[in-house]
Image 1 (tube, one colour):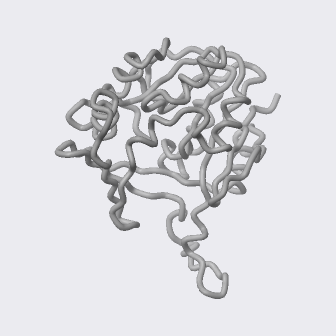
Image 2 (cartoon, rainbow, N blue to C red):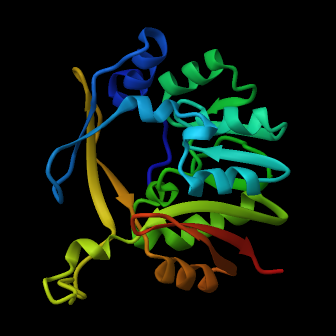
Length: 244
């Protein structure tokens, strides 16, 4: 679990977001992993409006209440949608270029900060973690530390709204059985590296977690997990609240 922020020369996603913001177009953001073939992320998707967001994200934005923390806010699309609803939101990201773009786009409270860093963030009624928000936890063994941090940031009665995906479908055989090494690492842990033009980032861990495993860790750490909505491709939105 990383606790720092990025520098512009190691910020490929920020460079892509800044390019699209200023030029109205951008080259694809290249994504590499030891687990998958090279992929590309269309940068335009990071600038979607509320009307073009998936229903799962729309549900999360409607549910968010009180003082809201938008984690890994990127271009600010979720924060801007929340502001348009009249809601109080603070956007954070580890990307300095993304933070600059969010300010230019009109996000009123935006900060260069890491959720797990030492920056004073305050407390919140809703912590919003979208676009596979569980990813920043990194590895399954970091789940207890994640929930400890959430207890520091959540106000009484507050909740986390987080989406993720169950990657088990990638390991199904022709007969519907699972080809997962139960003695190995959790199957939802993935390593990634991104590149935009000549800007190449550092490798990082990313966690996709199935709902049953999330619910188990939540209960062990004093939280309740509720599956609010399922998406169209093995993804879901969870509401996590601390036990009284």
